[in-house]
Amino acid sequence: MRQLSKFITLSLVLYICVNPVFGQINTGQVTGEVNTITSAVPFLTIAPDSRSGAMGDVGVALSPDANSMHWNPAKYAFVPNDMGFAVSYTPWLRELIPDINLAYLSGYKRIDQEQVIGFSLLYFSLGNIVFTDVVGNTSGQFNPNEFAIDGAYARAFSDRFSGSLAFRFIYSNLTGGQFVGGVESYPGTAYAADVSLFYMNTDLTAGSYDATASWGLNISNLGSKISYTKNSDKDFIPINMRLGGAYSIEFDDYNSITMALDINKMLVPTPPIYSTEEVDINGNPMIEAGMDPNVAVPVGIFQSFYDAPLGFQEELNEFTFSLGAEYWYANQFAIRGGYFQEHATKGNRKYFTLGVGLRLNVFGLDFAYLVPLFQNNPLANTLRFSLLFDIEGMQNRR
Image (cartoon, rainbow, N blue to C red; front, side, top):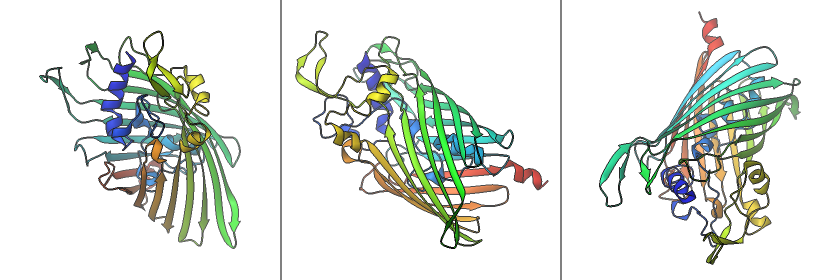
């Protein structure tokens, strides 16, 4: 039954989501060269907003804004305004299919000087899919969709340090109740939490200029596994650890620049290398290298640091790196750029990003564009659009 769950999550999600090495996605039969880590509901790992999307997908230590829920909810404790929200839209993988999109709504409300609550809704539509039976006859059509609803509480422990707890409900309906391989499928649900920390020091100098340094840590999607059938084994959701830092310099009242770096690691088991000849007493292939990925969530989290079939070097290959830069003029116009790097054996996502931002009195507009390093990449020409609203600014203008 596990193969059914893998079929659903891989064929309908991974194909059209975050990993461009479609023909190399691992299901256990690997040679040790390409061994990508897979999970259910990978839409949770897509950068939803245009600011971070234009900076190589950095975000855990950037200055706080309405989109901090995805990157590091602890940043909300230092958000400058009393209340705000943002709306983002991404036409996803338009080089392949024209009707896939990601929509994101997020916001926050300050309770007092130390406490802030945040919320978000992430919705992923996979377009219209026609289902057929084993002989090719149409058995129906459906628009698969997934969403996650988040709530967070952030608190400042000092004037420089904050923490946050966030809770998430995840819903994934990929088949609309269709029978897959003769087995009835169902929408999958899961519950998860994020634990995050944020530090920001605004009292620094770089020569004669004012400077700000910050770092952040977010361990996200700590939660239950998910299943699409009643009898199948459940699959991990994308439990993730993101650590990063940022450094900003204000040259004068009009010009400032920020550099940021994020390091990212999936905290789910690495697929082992299975034997092509030996089987166990249940008829399943024996593991030749690596560790059994069918473990409980707490075990899988810790196991993810030492279970790679090829040892320590492969564990290092599982880290991804994001580097971004942002220039602001008069805190009204921004130019952004970035780079994302993933090892060739773990997905081979490598791309540059660029974008611009505009801030007015009560709202802001951000735009991002993705440029992959390789031709014929399904991520090519990915666009992101974000609108940010300052509720306090709207009220002050009345």
